[in-house]
Image (cartoon, rainbow, N blue to C red; front, top):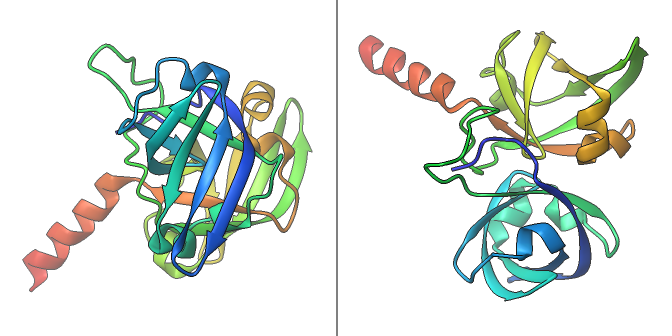
Length: 198
């Protein structure tokens, strides 16, 4: 379980991907400092297990399911990724409850400066948009954000300078993709409503 508050922007030191899966090596001095093998790390919002740790680097395996559903297969050496270690009972819940179970991706359609913020508009499929509501939570590349507005084609968020500096969203461009995890509560509500109808 995570909060969507990014701890560090890690750097891809190496990535190997084929049909069977892959291995990702990340350089992250802060996150790797007390990381142990078997610990969970949200990597661009994807819950991955550390399989080797040698600070300042650690390695994670990439299953075919992960590669098919997320933007991790497009990573290259030198790319930056959002990293967050799993929560503890002492962790402040500054964002919202994020599982690291990515539902799919969304594509940036527009980036518009408005005062200190950047309003970023995303397009996404119906399977994601059905759970997006204005002023609700969404995790993009593992970043806990509030939805500004939404319609049947996409949604937008407001990115403040602090979040732009500390996350991948600050250097994304139009056409780039982000990993999306919708609010878990929305899925449960839908399931309960469907069960009552059935």
